[in-house]
Image 1 (cartoon, helix red, strand yellow):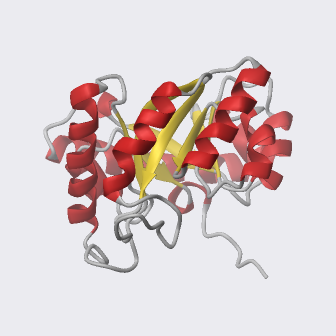
Image 2 (tube, helix red, strand yellow):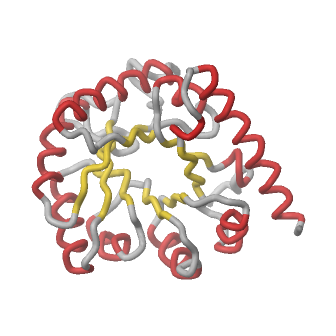
Image 3 (cartoon, helix red, strand yellow):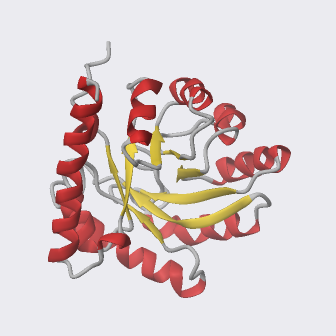
Length: 239
């Protein structure tokens, strides 16, 4: 085993222990939580090593990095998640490799994704990104729509050919009433998920929690956690 593979294996084992402990503490089964490894800034060779180590869900946040990486790993049975803010001019490329877009936050993006998915003959899973730092009608600092915009966007995804409403996603906010209160933020997301599932039971995915706060997300009921640094290491500063 190479040094890098050994490093990744050890990091994955530690993250697995954290998720398992969080599930046990919450009275949940370990199989109720899916680990998504966020591979942004890391090479395709790391993705291949992660696959060898059993990882099947990976995420990227920039199309210019993700597209060539996904192409280099096209022979692997991976589910690719796009988690970054997405401009409409990147939609066609993203639809070419992503199985799930977790950052759907405006009607214009729904229309663009639908058109690209139809042209590509694909069905794309969509998560509505909820910004818990946004006021009514606004978008959050890191993307996402205010909670009161979820229903309108969910309806748009329901009506859009080529798209499947899979659930909700959030990033713990750095400002506003939930700043520094990750568990409260994730509880709020679960409340919104419960309301969404009342009329759309299949939209049961709840993506929340990262390296620093995955325990709080699991305790709140998240079905997917997005972990990068704890698996791959601290990223070099950009710029």
